[in-house]
Amino acid sequence: MDRRSFISTVAGELLAAPLAAEAQQTGKVWRIGYLAGGARTSDGAPPAALRQALQELGYVDGRNVIYASRWAEAKSDRLPALAAELVGLKVDLIVTFGGKASEAGKAATSIIPIVFAGAGDPVGIGLVASLSRPGGNVTGISDQAIELSAKRLQLLKEVVPSAEHVAVLWNADDRGMTLRYGEIERAARVLRVTVQPLGVREPEDFELAFSAMTRERPDALLLVTDALTVLNRKRILDFAGAHSIPAMYESGFLVRDGGLMSYGPNFDDNFRRAAVYVDRILKLSKPSDLPVEQPTRYYLLVNLKTAKALGLTVPQSLLLRADEVIR
Image (cartoon, rainbow, N blue to C red; front, side):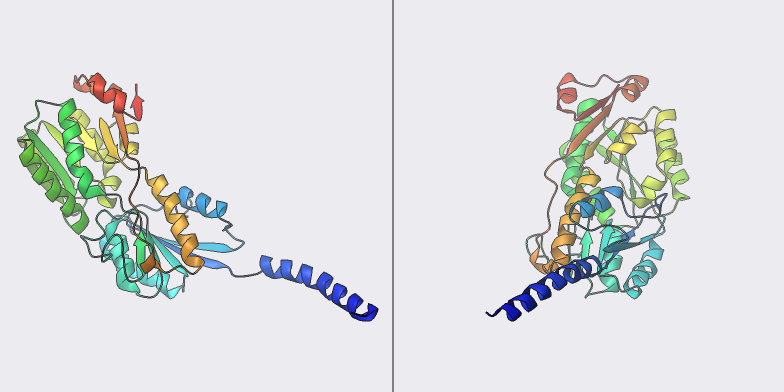
């Protein structure tokens, strides 16, 4: 290479370097949709755990990713329209939370990839063909809610061994929640427990459920958690406390709010794992090739203040297994 060619080459490379850096900075801006059946967050953004995990993977809000969030406020009939809005915004991917939100997303598009961060039984409600081979445009993280239902009832019996009559409160308008109820019924037969079914569909139905428990007081209560029951959690916690009914919940925040005990996954963990799926799909992996993951850890929380108020003594063996004990 002669001197003139060498200088031209070096000059070209020096010029290309800042241009490449600028191209990287002003490159693709990903649009990520978020769809959930529950209450809108205070800032209107997707859960912090999801955004933080994506930022650690290089997706900086306002720089190379923007979020569009839609919340149904426990009004599941709004989900199809909200999912259609996200599709209309031409998002690159949709993250969903909850079975009904995931179903709405799948019904709205067969092209845009969907990652669910908790959908109960994704096979049972038809989101995926199987956990190992999801097929289609949907994959994500399952919370194994069906399998855990029996375990929750068993743990509740450890704390209240005399319990023979257990009320189960769930959203009967949600297929995934009804599947959980069915598993609780099966476990109850094995544990020789009678179940009092209290299916609700609207906020007004909770008063009917409370009236039923007032007329026929259960020995314990098991709450199946979804957008509807979470939005009405204060009413449920207050009723259980006022009537001295020991209750098992699925999520730890309900125990921190005053519930007796809970057993289940940490949804922040699910959102962090969902971020990995988002990253892989945006880097051209196909959802159909990404097996559905299940949580690797479940958390047992016990509120000893609530146990004392109920006059219960929590077995030491259970306290030793607890991940968090509120005193």
